Length: 73
Image 1 (cartoon, rainbow, N blue to C red):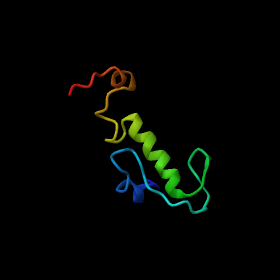
Image 2: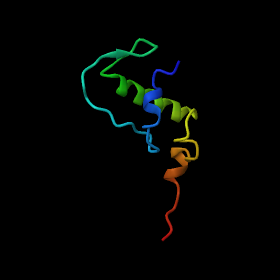
Image 3: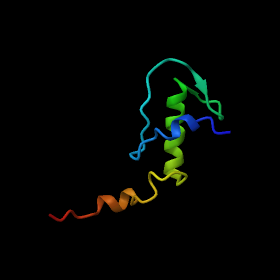
C-alpha cells in the first residue's frame, strides 16, 4: 500500500512538494515522526527520486560533473 499516493501527482519536477504547516503528527514506517503527512511524503518522494525510483533526478549529472561544466555564451 502506498500511503503517499495522494501526493505523488503533486510532486514537482524540481523535487519539491508544497505542503501546509499544520500540526498533525504522523510516523513513517521506520517510526520517525513528521509534522504532518504531506511533509512525511515530501521527504519520502524526494528520497525515492534521488535513488532513481522517480523521474526527477534520473537525467541529472552528478554534482561533481555539474561543478566542472564550462558555460559558453
